[in-house]
Image (tube, rainbow, N blue to C red; front, side, top):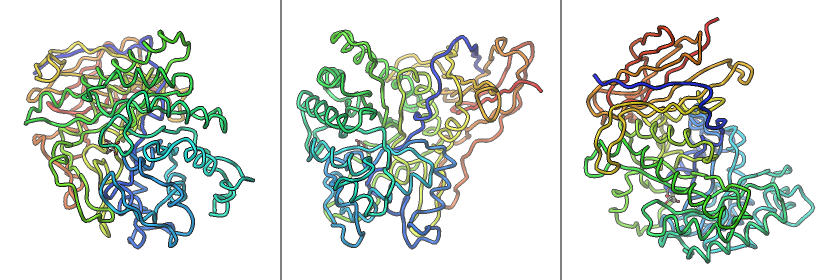
Amino acid sequence: MLHASLTVDPAFRVAEVNPRLFGSLVEHMGRCVYTGIYEPGHPQADEDGLRRDVLALVREMGVTTVRYPGGNFVSGFRWEDSVGPVDERPQRLDLAWHSTETNAFGLHEFRTWTEKAGIEPMMAVNLGTRGVAEALDLLEYCNHPGGTALSDQRRANGAKDPFGIRMWCLGNEMDGPWQTGHKTAAEYGRLAAETARAMRQIDNRLELVACGSSSSSMPTFGSWEATVLEHAYDQVDYISCHAYYEEWDGDLASFLASGAELDQFIDDIVATADHVRAKLRKKKRINLSFDEWNVWYLSRFQQEEVPTDWAVAPRVTEDEYNVADAVVVGGLLISLLRHSDRVTAACIAQLVNVIAPIRSEPGGPSWRQTTFHPFAQAARHARGTVLRVEPVAPVYDTKRSGEVPVIDAVATHISGAEGEDGDELTVFAVNRHLSDTTELSVDLRAFPGYRLVEHSVLSDPDVRAVNTEQQPDRVRPHLAEPGSLDGGRLVVRLPAVSWNVIRLRPVG
Ligand code: AHR
């Protein structure tokens, strides 16, 4: 048994929990949209062809914002194809994923889906094959009330009210050579600045996101962000970040420490953005929109042959997640929460079927992957203020991140006055040790009179266990063995390779 401790104190405030931290990505990729969220003819489809079973899971997951329509897909997207009568919409080649896009699901269908799901839409504009004019057209179509050609076209297409989309991504991963219309940092920085300037002429309240690096392994990581921000600092609010993690060569110890890699990624980009701020002598700070993050077995996907049949909604990168993957997702959520003073938006990528917490079968059922659970629990219980907790824990050695504490944790606190559900203190913690339970001692003296409501744990003797269509609930959180609380000291046990949610409330 290992031993660790941490202190929870309202004085260790990071920031308020920003609901936008619990966003996701819906891309026209594989079966995320078609047979994912949308499947007319499915027994569960509603009058709009939206799958009710998937909608219910999306709501349960607590997703707050959804970035759309990509991803790499957006760099070839002609938004005009996706509006108007469905049977008149053109089929197009999607160069990003070598498939055929039918455009049966488009802007209005997306808007309907977000309304039904209670989600804030976040739109990306195509800065790959297109530029300023088309971004303006899309903005006018979506957000202008009426009385112009494009806004009246929207109204004629059935949406009298503007979509009111506030957050806009200026392209996607433009640093990647795979991106249609790939650019250098200087080329993109200029284009992003000009597009943002023009979009702000329509609406100065928009929140605009410039593309950062597509991953921290890109050779231009850091310098890309600096150059882009030197061009676009005044015009944008966020720099986007993307990171996918996987277990390399069976090195589970390093994989479980992915949260430490994410910590460093965030610190590096915050430093880069603040360096540009100093250089340009600006007051405003640029925040991070971590609008693609997840576990993704990308190296397997990259080994697959590029499809040549241009299929409609083929099965692409439908990773099946195990217990360890869920613990990593929990660790990534802890890192994002801990940085919520600067990471003010984030999207798990993606939502359904494609590297996704939700799976669905055409004509068949939908179910929760293991990774659904840490996300849903964090989205539900991370409320109020994020508190830094600084665990003191034994370290273990990893190839990728060096020595890493076995425990990582963060806490949130909502006072009774703030929340509908009353006062609650929640500690989110992962035990990354491969074999040992860790006894965690939590100093709660700054929260006198709180009692343990629930300690939920996701762990399994088989860290490779997964949820499948046949066994959809093989892996799910369960109640931990009861902890003890005495003299302001809570003691709980965190099993090896586990994600834990420890909830406390004042007595009475
Ligand atoms: O989410 C899958 C892909 O990963 C996205 O399309 C792209 O932005 C990233 O490389």
